[in-house]
Image (tube, rainbow, N blue to C red):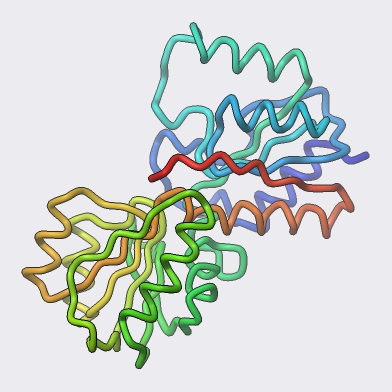
Length: 257
């Protein structure tokens, strides 16, 4: 049995939470306390009723998530929000969230693990946010269709569907960039063009990014927001298990996006 404070201190230090900038709604770290005792944990991409139900079923007292309780900003605790809060309290379940600190971690990060999953070797950072590179970039010599097949397998395994901007069958990817989650926007596309990247691998992005990418000569692989961000949170759970000997279970709740 381990104290919540010990696990939180471990994760905070491991992910360098205090020094990584993030969006206001991220609220990295402990978002909901419990009485302190943790015997097992569950991990999930999103804080949701499914994650809470998974924790209750596993008799876990801590949920580790990538997208936390306050992602939508301050809202009244009524309806489903009330029921989620009540379930946490009644079952003495704590919540710990890690967003950008988990995206960019050099070992446990979503971007590092996605690059490894796609057999890509990074050699630099990509997707700058307040002076920090959230994503990765690198050089390769791989048929784009093979890269798309690998990304498609990952997406499918977590309930998603790969979407790829059009490209010729014999096209070769030589300079790539990765930014998981909502990684495609005008700023990442501009940065990709400035760095001479020809292929961008992301979770999702708005329609206009596909149009803009074609104008810039960049192919975009949209592998799914959910699918591309299952990697880091499971790795964080494994790290807690290794450090404290606490069982960890991943609650898979695909969004289809």
